Length: 79
Length: 211
Figure 1 (spheres, chains in turn red, blue):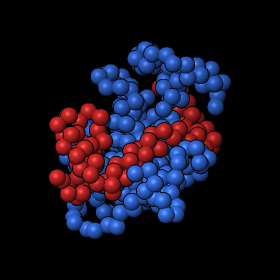
Figure 2 (cartoon, helix red, strand yellow; figure 1 turned 180 degrees about the horizontal axis):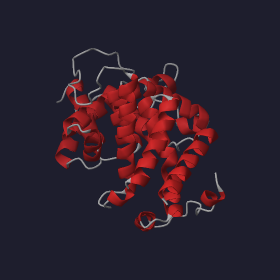
Figure 3 (cartoon, helix red, strand yellow; figure 1 turned 180 degrees about the vertical axis):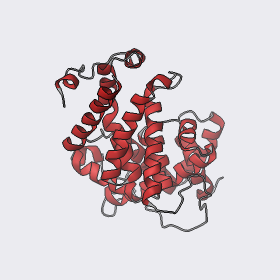
Figure 4 (cartoon, chains in turn yellow, red; figure 1 turned 90 degrees about the horizontal axis):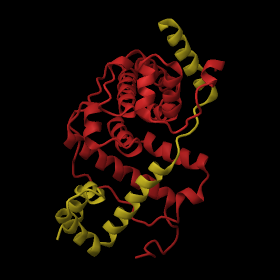
């Protein structure tokens, strides 16, 4: 069986939904036997979920207004 | 904002290819709609990479101004979003290099894949952070964690896991190899997992309660 260190170097593959089934099974064997790596897989998944799930913050109003003014100047200059 | 820009359609889900074609034909309101669609994401990306408010604002402006300028050169083989992300990443990396003075930031320099022993934080999380924290608090926690990563790592993580570019697109945007993207992504993911686990872990004795 893989050591934890070997498993962790393959963690991206394990988390990749498109990984080939043979690799997946090979890695799965370690996760089923190793409670630490099970927790690492679970919390890494949650880390990715929380980053992907959060909506981007609003841009501060002053920053936004300067962006649109700059765009407006650019468009006026090129028209 | 001028009345002209206010008149831009409020992010209706219209076909993006069509919008881009209209913008390329000189329809300013179509370009304005593309900006409205992606401005928050581009600002987030700029903040994540530069970690500096002033630089992030410059990146936001310069990216969209350059996109407008070079719109005729956009071939439509990639998505408009991927294209604008690549422009913004280039601008952000330039800012990062400037801030670091003479020290050239190479995103392809070998990284330490050493054997250092890090005490891993092994604990399950207490419920679902999205339900337990306000959006504002969550943004603060997530931003602080990314801020603590080395620039090479946070840049790769931002593109792959926040902006959801593919490994190949990320490699191309940063001018680095696919294996370099993969190895940095792994380090970044593990580092963020550690940081977030310290924040979100279940307190007390039953950290393995769901095993």
